[in-house]
Amino acid sequence: MSEETAVMAQGLRKSYGKVRALRGVDLDVQRGEIFGFLGANGAGKTTTIRCLLDLIRPDSGTVRVLGIDPQADPEAVQARTGYLPGELRLDPNMTVEGALSYFKALRGNEVDWGFVRQLATRLDLDLKPVIKNLSHGNKQKVGVVQALMHRPQLLLLDEPTLGLDPLMQHEVLRLITEAKANGATVFFSSHIMSEVEAVAERVAIIRKGVVVEVAEPASLISRALRRASVRFKQSVDMVPLANVAGVTVLSQDDGTSVLLQVEGEMDGLIKALAAFPVSDFETERPSLEEIFLAYYEDDQKEE
Image (cartoon, rainbow, N blue to C red; front, side):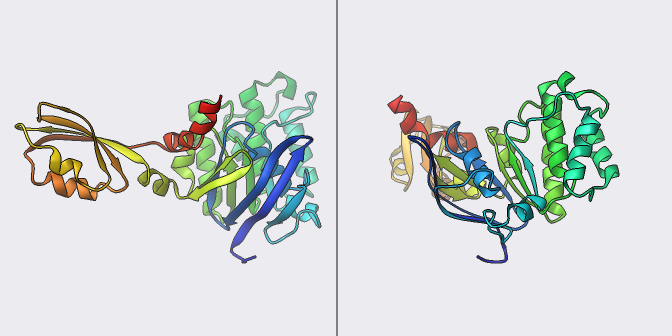
């Protein structure tokens, strides 16, 4: 394992009875990067994260976190990690301040309480209320603060913006990027594709317990199909456009407009259009969500 690797998993398998949650997960997360982990419900995201922390043990496979085997020394891994579970359980009778003080004590009191208050202020989190009186969104804020409060080397965040309003979602993303700027590695799962696309340097897509793709978001998008709508000043022969590699004519109207599907780079189409009297040109850029959903089309058809 390279010293540059923060998280390594090879061949992780985990079953719950007859349900095969992980079927051979491979991951390689580099130190100092923000890594997005995408998958539908039941794809294996949470099970993978719990295996990384030795909260559950895989049936087989190898895991290293910050160079440490979590099964051999889970305390060392957890001391260096900030973890936000997808379903955070807090003592309902504690105040927010009491809950965060408890997490501070668990970490050997090596927490700057001024930083805790700063985080709470940025997330508009009142420290005085009792946990059971908080909304779901405010409980989520408590979870975010406890994950960040000790400035860990690694953040493992399972749906960190779940239940937050858009303003707070953006603030959590800012906190994530600031943690990365201060040297932390961030591994987070999410259903919100726009936030993954905004902050993640690489993403992994997990499907039915197997990682089916790892790439930069821009790379995934550039490989996807795009649509281009072109209008011409006069009627033209569309045949040269249809002959461009990767271009398919979807529809045309009297030779004055055409809707094209483009696979891969746009360069060939742009060069071909230079020979035409173009009056208008529009493209539809695919989102990361469209890319993600493409990996689940087969599942949807089966259903």
